[in-house]
Length: 415
Image (cartoon, rainbow, N blue to C red; front, side, top):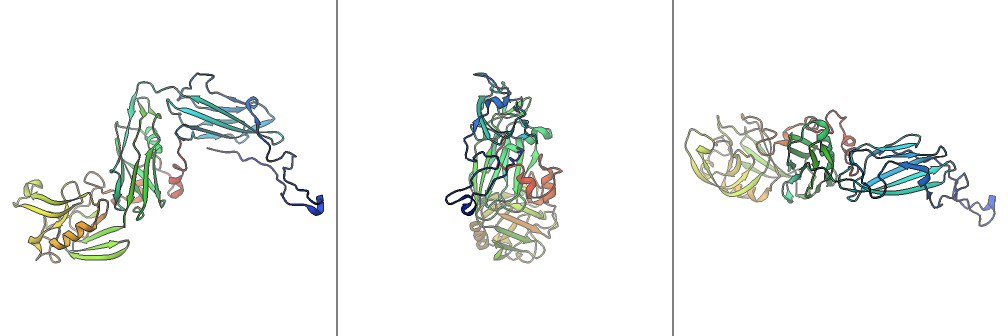
């Protein structure tokens, strides 16, 4: 919301004993009006295009407040609904007109607070309230956030699944602006449209260790397009643990694990052999399974195998794990013999299984395998550079890079 600053010369509130005499003070404005004066009723000084009496406003029509006298001007307008959502708007430089710049929510109750100033600088105020009509019988766009509430590693993206497809930059901007992600400590981040029904949110870097992340939506009642109106969304709270990052070097056959930047273990491993080389890139732990049955048929391998595998930590949807491989201990640290998974001794696999949690980072380097897909096979989000990630945002695509560009969209909840 744009504000025109109130300009007034204020004298010092200092005891002017020498100039004014003992006990005299100067606590007022240069025009003679006390700063603490009670605001006058500005009803006769402004005009408002809102509904009259019990009538309801059309949420598609913008609000407008205008000054009705050349002797006064509008200094501020604040419009909020019962959910605390602000209506973004613009105030002209001369204070003659304020108008909303975003649609109102349907079926909402609004309070509009208008501040004015007359030619002598005296403050005026008017508070108005009205309701908007319910949305027509259109389809509701519901949002489901993920993952489930809980504690995760610092690489866990936030997801938003929409109940209907949203296309076009304008409609996507309305949706994206309403989806709120706030972390403590604060960190720069952005949404990425994976497809017309799915968004992912991640920071520029990994989440801070031991952070709290609150996810919510202000989309309820907001018109997205002619066929969709925003529906309810259950808020989500996540926390992160320590920063755990495991780096597997497929050429040296070792995995090094770091906690908060410090090495805590180094483990001999074997990765995918030629024809089944492990994917390069950053992966996010998807889950852990104490025992998994792995067969050659599940990946279309030409050489037959059917094994019960223990301490299995999944990193892709297609079946790549970090797991116990006691049959390949002789190759671990020396050769790559697996069908794409990262194998280690049972003792090391049990330690890894107990150390990591969902959302922790597992990175593979120096493999002959393909690069990890950003989407569609687990969470490969971190394999996109920040510039490309921002390009997937309806709000930030083409915007100047920097924290200010991100914060501009989330300074306060707007309709």
